[in-house]
Length: 64
Image (cartoon, rainbow, N blue to C red; front, side):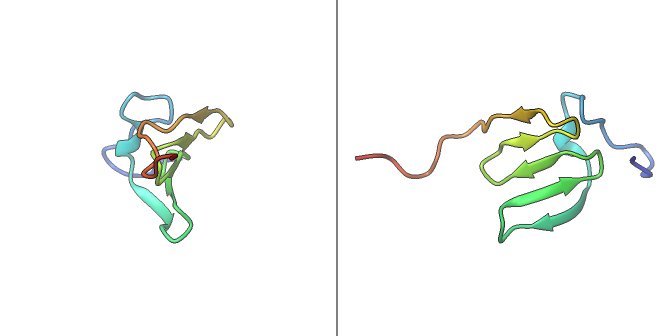
């Protein structure tokens, strides 16, 4: 999928978030990387094969 040189990390690579952004919609809270990974603003990810990666940071609001 990636046509960059050097090639971006694959969706299975540990550093997959280092791939270049090809589409972004910050108003909707997501970015598409050239390796097919969708990153959400809560740090969760959707991989090209449909697997999801849970968010790594806690929500900004706390329940009372």
